[in-house]
Image (tube, helix red, strand yellow):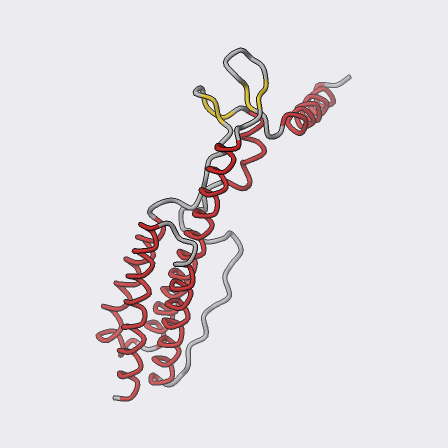
Length: 199
C-alpha cells in the first residue's frame, strides 16, 4: 500500500472515530462520559446568546456599510453623516465584544476532547476578523438625489432599531441593556436623518 493510500485510510478511520464519539468527553480515568444536562443547557444558552450577538452585529455592520456607501456617493453630506456613522461604528464594536462563538460545553478540566472539538468546530468557529463572509457582498445602492439617500439611511436606521428592540425579548439582561441603548440611538438617528431630508 502506498503512503498516500495509508494516509487516506488513517483519515477515514479518524473521521469514523469522531462520529462514533460525538457528544462524549474523556473523563480523568480515560473513560468516555456524556455531558450533564446542566452542561448541555449552559451550552444551549451560550449558543443562543452568541447567535443573537451575531445577528445584532451583522445588522449594525450592514447599516455601517450603507453609511459608507452614502458618503461615497454624496461627499457633501459628510458634515451631517460623519458623527452618526461614527456612532454606528461604535455600536457595531460594542455589540460584538462579548463574542459570537461558543466552545462546546462538554469539556474536561484538560479541555475539550478531540471528538467534541471536531463536532463543534463548524458551529463554534469564530467569524472572520473582518466580520464578513468570504463571498463578496452585493454593493449597496444609493439614491442619486441626496434627500432620497438620507431617506434610505433613515429607513435603514429604523429597520436596525426595530431589530434590536425585538431581540430584547430573548437577550440576557446586560446585553439587553446594550441593545436598548443602541435601538434608542438608532431611532434618534432616523429622526435626525428624516428632519435633515426635509431641510
